[in-house]
Length: 119
Image (cartoon, rainbow, N blue to C red; front, side, top):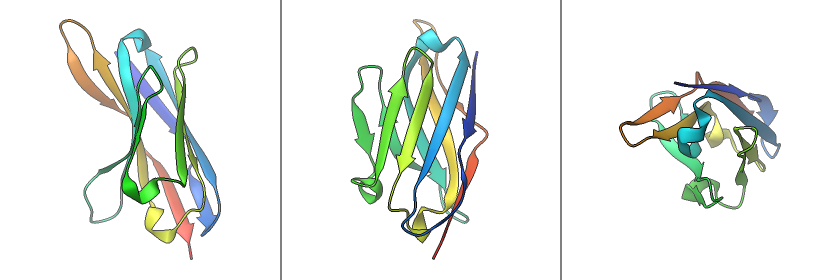
């Protein structure tokens, strides 16, 4: 009922910047919060940042002050601006949508986009 497509990953040197985008399609009117998660090799997937329809944001401590999440509700796009990147930010980044109706509550995930930060 919802499809998520991420873009914007790549290879960047430490200290550099990248901007990730995630476009949602389908029943986007039922999407509540959207967010970004990441998974590094050998590690569990972890929250990076979330934003709800009102614009309230939440960040992992490790990215506070460096990453900014934003959202265009009209276009159903969520962005993640990543500045001052560190090698430990290297991971596959996944877009997430919290889909809710009166009858259904489920999470949707994108296919992931690789971010690699070289030292």
